[in-house]
Image (cartoon, helix red, strand yellow):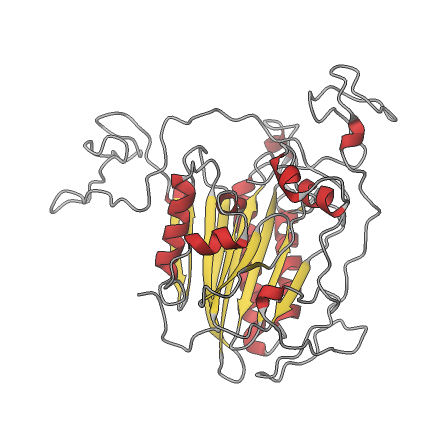
Length: 434
């Protein structure tokens, strides 16, 4: 669950929510130092795509293009240089966003019914019937309204735990142990490029909880981005150009959700427009492309665990800004309660969209993990993520995704948890989970 930003000129104290006057340096109610909130820089225009031709496919030039295409030198993905949307080396994280969302709503310590553990099988329905057994008491039958006839508990919704695989790519999403609903969503797909070589893709979105209908935002974004990638790649569009367009289209889909009837806003007049973060990956036989906005992440873990793993994305977050500005080290920044305040998101109240994209040419086999902070909160460093990931993740991606989600649940499951596992290079048609 991502935390929500405010506008550049703070209207209320981030600490106590007391209204502020223009020019206030300290909160008049609690004395909070308002200079602790980093001042956002001026909006930056979206960079044009130049892309990097892949030697395996005769990619056309991405459009629009204002500079000549550049061929990145082969490198290990663990070095994480990549290229950004303008074809330049991927920069260190910096204050590239124009606002920070802090207005996270208070949540209860526990909800009455925990989501079922995906690693524990639900008892089968009674022979010859379609009756569902309650996940809470494991004894009562569930009536047509979704409540247990024995203990009265409402049963988990279908979205509380989702699993999906497409060819060699798989994803799992779980509500976690503390939230009343799952606000994450994802899309996975497997297709072929014009020359017949395979391509796998995964999109993961994390709804911003203090926004209106965050679950709808993540669903709209993941489906829109997945559809664009699935349509563009078989046409021969360069994966990095396709990724850029997919994020832009996902943003439009989330923006459209803000056009709700006025009557709907009467119930939540103080909430922001629907919003979410996004992270996605496209893997071909020789190229790995990632794209993101927000604080959901992509990790690279080589099959040879003696080689170093790497994080392929940089967060759009308060913590990343503090580290980039030299005001805190990484440990201090991520220990702060404001660490997960995002500075980039998809939604009608976002600032000028800045899709990040990067391309890599790994020199060895491995897997790409595309996940929300519900997972990486419990395995933040690349080496920690590699230690949790099963060694056979490339051949059993669905099993690997289940293990990673289980790790987050065992560690507390305080947030929704979503992860997609994408093997590199993309296996040929017919490959899948064992």
